[in-house]
Length: 337
Ligand code: FAD
Image 1 (cartoon, rainbow, N blue to C red):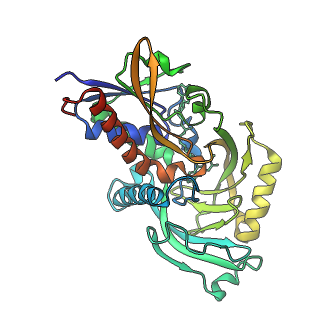
Image 2: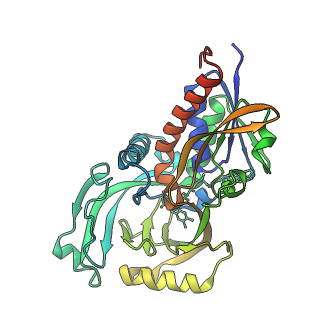
Image 3: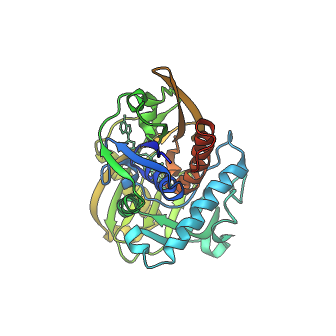
């Protein structure tokens, strides 16, 4: 049986999750990841990697619940295994706080994380400017460890890795199917003007006494303890392409975070980082087709996850695998995948 040649463009958390899913599930597919940047140089590498999600209003909530649930359950198994520190996955407990009571008090994922409940008035006393809060245990996935771990898993499943810039998907016409996981690169590669950056700056600090996360619901101020350091953030600057550190942002981040957690006064700043969230009104996880040199090559798109790509990566990869399988059946109806 001849192999089907599949190219996955992108080596961030979306590309590697998709590539691993395909390579491990379709033994007859020869999968190559092609990307300009690999770990530690992708956006995914610097993400705090906490499992949260905002609701995308253009996507049925049941589909978003499935993405969240598939991701959460997959990584929870890893968190409960001896692989956890190698994969950079850990459980993380803490709270999300709101200045005023939100219209939706239970997000769509409330029953998918562990022990979700509202904060009591005495718990809220710690945050005098906030009037409502939620406590729960979720996951944190540090991609600086997770991506190399996924790459190892991908190569073990027979995958091939190639580092290069792709100027146009037409360059990949030697493949039977293309999976586009190029994040912000999709603005050019998929000719999608709806894709835009949301700049995020974060600091890593040494503060080992901080064990619980705190997130302000505006998404701009958060404290996430991790395996080796605490990530404090952040910024959400739409359409801002700057990748350099802005020291005004640094000052603002530290001031805002110290208001929530005064003990950060004693923390040592270890590093500063900026990343551009590959944003869109909603993620694009769907089939398309590329017409080139008289051929129709199926393309499965998986990009535009904004600030929630780590959270949704495995669930969207499972959907992508389904779309790849359908597309391959269409081009090779009798092929045994
Ligand atoms: P990327 O990681 O950017 O990967 C894109 C890949 O495509 C790269 O390999 C790149 O080289 C390749 N590529 C692009 N164009 C081309 C081309 N033309 N040719 C070849 N290769 C190309 N998410 C969460 O779920 N939880 C969080 O707590 C969280 N915190 C965040 C904090 C910050 C400050 C930031 C910036 C983001 C955060 N995110 C978080 C969001 C998360 O980082 C992204 O959603 C996720 O990394 C997107 O993954 P990706 O694989 O699509 O993109």
